Image (cartoon, rainbow, N blue to C red):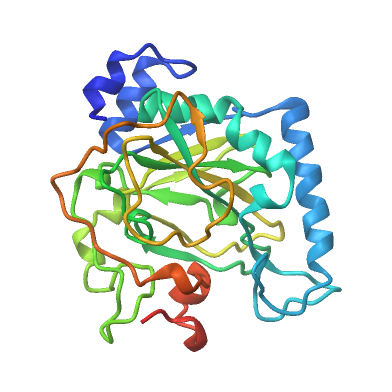
Length: 299
């Protein structure tokens, strides 16, 4: 659905000015958007997940851990598909204020795509290099976005997410390296074409929400603070934006209509999109891919 048609619908929770800002810049930051019992319940669930991770020695289908992760000193990079591990996460994704945010920016009919919990651990939690989301999971159109929730207060030291304003209207970049291996990041030679010096670094107290368009160029620096920076992310699409490649993390909740109804017609964009490798055999980790850890590079 085109922005002008989306804006013609009465907003559920955002102001019209916030919606217009999103379509112009490709992102939003909503300070202290999730509060009270809902936030506390998610934080408590995450604390339990960290305790559970002490039982694993290496990355698996559920956990992506840094090299050096141990039971005594856990160092998590990501919890894959949190909605599959706790109803707390699924209830938040399918029926909470963020679901209304998705409807305000995608149109009244919204589909759940995936979730992830990025930890960016303390004292060196890994960077996320400049990249775009849509090449990981191309759709028939670009009505796809991700909504993050900061579960701790985030300042400059903690490696906040940075978004390049307006980059969602620019080119879709190559995310393969010079050996034609998928690394999930812009090539160093392409980065100068992006005005990364204008990036807005999204900081805020726990409960703040970030929203970014699937074509927006974004990334984050390592966490140099003594505090982890957990960020719970849920991705949604307009119902008329249909995935055209294998899902990186297939699951029973993928494709669930969370607002409105299923689409009868697919809408097609007039701008081509880079295709990723075939994920039907499984997906490793954006962190491992970007660091070009040899066993995970996708060909």
